Image (cartoon, rainbow, N blue to C red; front, side):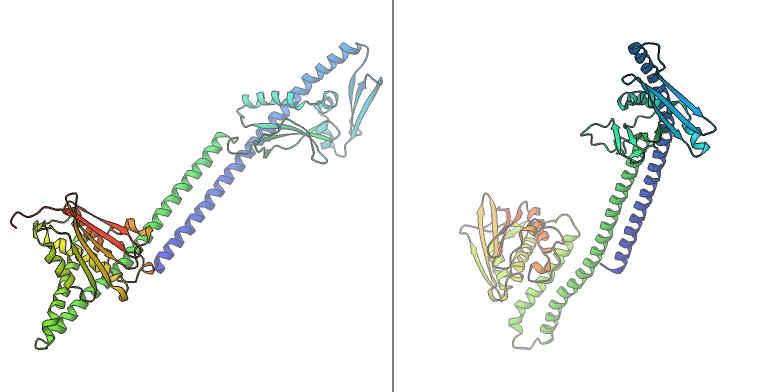
Length: 455
C-alpha cells in the first residue's frame, strides 16, 4: 500500500473519529437537556403532590384519631415563633397521654421562611407512605405528559441512606435520573427523592429518537467509510496488479523473442536444425499468451469445429517439453473427433505448462490420460508438484487469480491460464475440474466426443 492510500485512509479514520466525537457530544448534550427539563418539571409536580397528599392524609389521620379517642382532645398543633425564627410541632400520643414535641430553630430568615410551610408541620403528623404517594404522583405525572418510569424514595438527608422505596426487587431498570431532594418536616432529617429510568427503554420518546437517529447516522457513515476504504485498497491492488502484469508480460514475451533472435542470427550453425523445434515451441508459447490475453477481454470464445487427431496433438505437446517426462496414455478406439484444434491445443498446453512449472526440477513428471466417459472425451493432466491448498481450489479458475507466491514455487504468471481453459471447455459444451492428489493435483478437461465421419 503506497503512501497516498495510507494517508487517505488515515484522513478518513480521523474524520470518522471526529464525527463520532461530535455525535457523542450532540447526544450527550441532548441527554443532559432532556434530563434537566424532566427533573425541573417533575420537581414542581412532586412538591405540588406532596402538599396535596399531606393535606388529604392529615384530615384522614385526624378523623381516625377522633373516631377512636373522642372529640375532647387536640391531637396536634403547630407553632411559629417569628422573632426567634423557630418552628414547633406538638403531636398527641394516645398511649402515654402526653405530647411529642418537635422543635427546630433556624439560623437564617430564608431557611425559616422555607420550612414555615404548613406541609412541613403536617409531615410530622401523618407522614408519607411511598406506595400511596407514588400512585398519586404517577397520576399527576401522566396528566402532565411525564410517562418515564420512576421510583419514590424517602431518604435520611444527613447520611443519604434510603429509608423506604417503591423500587421492586429484581427490577433491572436503571433509575439514574435523580430529582433534587425535597425536604420533609421541620427538622431536616428526612427528604423525598424521585428517580427516573435512565435506560434507553425508559427515556422520553424524543430522546430515544435522537439516540436512534444518531446511531443510524453513525452506522451508515461507518459502512460508507468501510466501502470507501475497500475501494481505495482495491484500486491500489489493481494498480499493483497492472504493474506486475506488465512486468510479467514483458518477461514472457522477451525470453522467446531473444531465443528466436539468437537462432536466426546463426542459420549456418550445426545446431540450427535441432533448435528449430524449440523455436517453434517458443512461437507457440507467444501465440498461447496472445490467446490468453484475448480471452481476458472477452466473456466467451468463438470456436471453429474441425477434425482433431488427439494422438498427434498430444505428441506435439510432448515434443514442446523436452526437459520434462510426459507420459501419454490414450484409450483404444478413440478416433479423430470434432473440436477447435487451436483452442483445444492451447488449453492442454496451459494444463501441461502449469504441471511442469509447479513441479520440482528433480521430478518433472506429468501423466496425460485420454479416455471416454458418458459421451465425453476426458483428458486428465496429473502432476506430482506442490499442489494447490484447499482454500484456493474454488478460485483457481477465476480470471487473474493466482495462488499466493509463498504457497507455491514462486513461478510467474498472469492468472489467465486456467480461466482460459475453463472458457475453452465451456465453449465446447464441456467443463474442467480439479482433483487434489498427494502429491500434486489432477486437472480433467471434458468436452463432447463427436467422431468425424471422414475417417
